[in-house]
Length: 262
Image 1 (tube, helix red, strand yellow):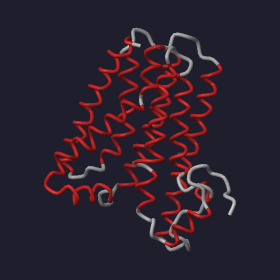
Image 2: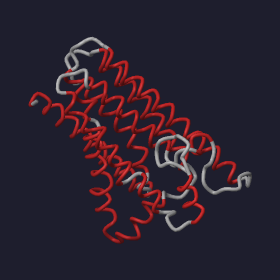
Image 3: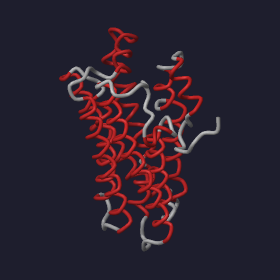
Image 4: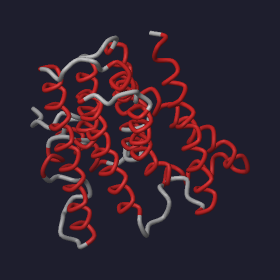
């Protein structure tokens, strides 16, 4: 187990420098929500550092690198174009109001470095696969890859459907304020469900390597964050007193995109 510590420290230092650079950029452009773009790209950095810190590259480590690359680039570009030309995300605007004069120092620790710490924990399967992968690809890898592909398709399609719905809403072509098309008919957060599946897919791949079960802390942690802390709760809190939203909640599942019995 101690074998992983040097790589963990190397990845942690890389994340620290990376998030500090993103924090500096946020001061220049006066937008803290740039950290959301940095989230997906940061995992690509982790995968690169983990992969090229090894004396030789394995098929499994290369496979996981490309999975993280596709996910990170898609997510970062999606958030960039979603935010382009708009005001800063309301969550960060609220932080500025609540924290007042201490915002800039607190944002470094409570937004950027905290997300960096979360990134390190979620990345555990990537790090373990890079360090301990010494066996050929097998059935466990195929199962993990299949789960990842399903999650990627769900998340990317959900984001695309939501984008189309928002465009229709702006044009006055929809009667409801909340998405009721495609996957969003059956799940209030199908994109989050897809993201959770992707991390569990990589976690399953990690079961093929020595001590890989320890790295399942990563997908467990991101699932907990999304479902109970910073993902779903923050979004749903915004609409909790909205009658139309409460009706949407009544007929639509939280995560699993299946019809709900009413």
